[in-house]
Amino acid sequence: EQHRRLDHVFCEYHGQFFPNSWYMIVRDEFKYVYYMNDRPQLFNIRDDPDELNDLAADSAYLQLLSEFEILLRSIVDIDAVAFRAKNECGMITPEGVDLTLRNMER
Image (cartoon, helix red, strand yellow):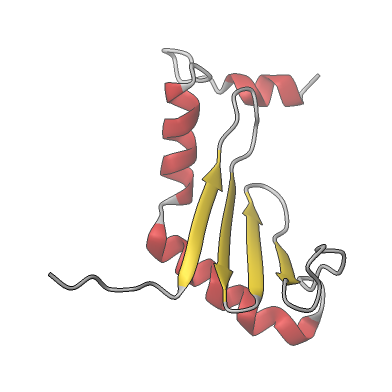
């Protein structure tokens, strides 16, 4: 049986009492980080291994940012997975109230 080799690495983070999930894709020399309810980040990890220069605000990278978001959404339903992770951590009440959002309002 042959396995298809992917050209990217995907990662996600959902912390208990953490209001927003994070998703990351590394492909070629770029690392893309999608933060729910915030702007994404983009780094050239070959030229900037310490990730000090966020390229996401540079208009030269708009197309690449769009490609990464399309790839991300082809991999995972970000909203559904974030909700399921919060629910499994006990952060969603039986009535559907997101307790992590309540913490943000303080």
